[in-house]
Length: 163
Image 1 (cartoon, one colour):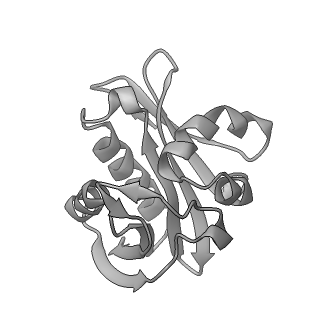
Image 2: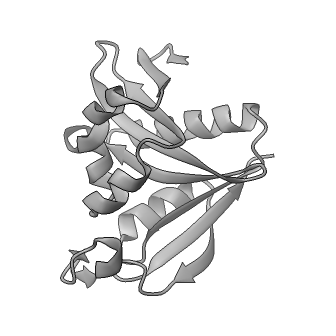
């Protein structure tokens, strides 16, 4: 899936050792190495590459059952953030999922992640649920984790209809 204007290319990387090279990007989306190890070899890993093949961002999509998927990890390289890459990447992934017959996508982010909450809502996601105390030591998250000066504790779930 090429983006003619920017020369970017979105591709799916199959499960296996090649996914290891994208762990630094996945770590931008999740502060728990235990969680990442548990899911990064599952589902479809979409990688957005620059024209020269350098990875710009990733979206890991996991099946949730039926025609529903979860965007488990969405991340753009820190030096490339704020350039519209995440918006373009997410739109391309959602378009591909739609073309593959998916009816709904869900995504979760920390309630303290105000930028992420805005990003997903601008992309058409709607608030659905709050899962209290999701970011716990039992899931591999440190007790003192903060974002925007706010303790990271609760997961906000959002969804978007794709049909």
